[in-house]
Image (cartoon, rainbow, N blue to C red; front, side, top):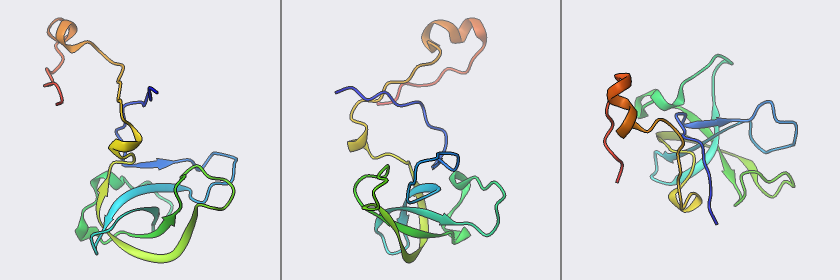
Length: 125
């Protein structure tokens, strides 16, 4: 099975405009201050835009823990708990196991970067 995933620049997924009933509105995957790797919904003080990718442990972001295997579940099996934890580190939204093959579509830097004056990026290993 091949998974095609868009190149992600964000550390959270926002599905606030989705009409189906998900357990969360903003989803993050993170390391809690007790060392657990969790998913949850950040507790933000106001409705203004917060770039969660720029937060650090010093920001003391809090999150409600999401439990369940399927983050897209609409049956209620996956749900937010009342457990509140402190986020030590924001992680990428998907684990390597969830994306066994990653394919990105973009400029062919090897051919076009010199003619277009783009920055040469090194290949990821």
